[in-house]
Length: 480
Image (tube, rainbow, N blue to C red; front, side, top):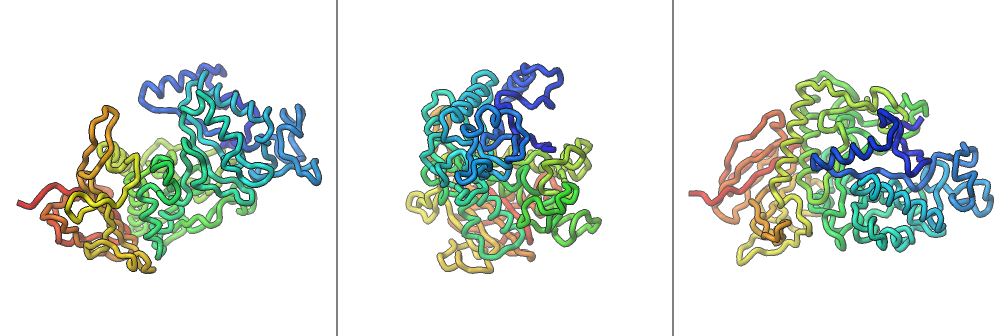
């Protein structure tokens, strides 16, 4: 049973389980209604393999029509398939007829169903030549030259399961990518792993080391996805619990970089529950304050758990279903996410279209981006390499924006300071002294249950940044 629907056969047919009347027009109505609410529709599509499995079948469609055309076959024994997908077979995108099938399908979903883009499952498999992944593959050329498909949103899951399959940062212009490096780095940081602040800095600012030729919007930032733990389970389990899948707990990711905050699974310990709540707020705040495109797993905004199952592909039951009977704690978390989204929308500084340059602004010592140590000064090269460092400050100069809005008007914003502390203990962070100014606390995950955090701090004074917390401060002006 594949509850997720990742074993496609009919590339022009919507999932029948989602249809109340069985009429395709329902999907068109769905898209039209979402568009009316200002929501775009991006399809998760699987063109890397089909539901026909390995050489043992089942035989449903393409195998019977022309097995040697549609699939990559083992050259030494063509009875068997080349499997870059972990699903038994791999579609052969080198063949013109297979490419035609994919292009016709994509155009159908755009022109007839009016979707706004696609997320390509295991996209590296679509770009393989005779063996290796080819960044100039015909698949990319066909899309870039197509007058319809070249205009929609294109998102790659930039890997497959074959040798050399991890291709993060290697997709062409016009493509965005799931940034697995972002996920892994932020998980390591918030569980307290030492020596990662340098990479944390890269991930917070759009991953220019990966997408320097495209810009921050090429990075789809995420902490969790359907593959792996939910956010609730990420802070509640050190290990996976996939026994219900009946594969002896062998399936699913083993190295999830999770931390249970002191007890495995459910707990009634107030201290553990408080730390888990704070960690969820840390992950969500980091995600929504990072440059790039944030992606949330449905249900994370209200504490959905799968009981520690990190591969619930076969669980068509309460493990995967959304529970809409929300507790007070769930509602508080949802309000926190709403607040973060509103903050991001109101401030263009957190969603720049170009990378920060570390550019000095005017004749001052202020730059468009500064990295600060807890003593309030700029981090030196040596300090970046300190293995024990787990606390960092990111100063963002909103008055230094050089971008324009949709009406060709210059963008401007407030100056912000993001403080992150993955230590267990409180760190006193000296606020920067570029000028005599006041820093207003916008949010602090140490007080996540509160609707607002009051506090104003003068420059050069210390802010008590509690352990396992993130704070956002806004510069409000000069001291009087």
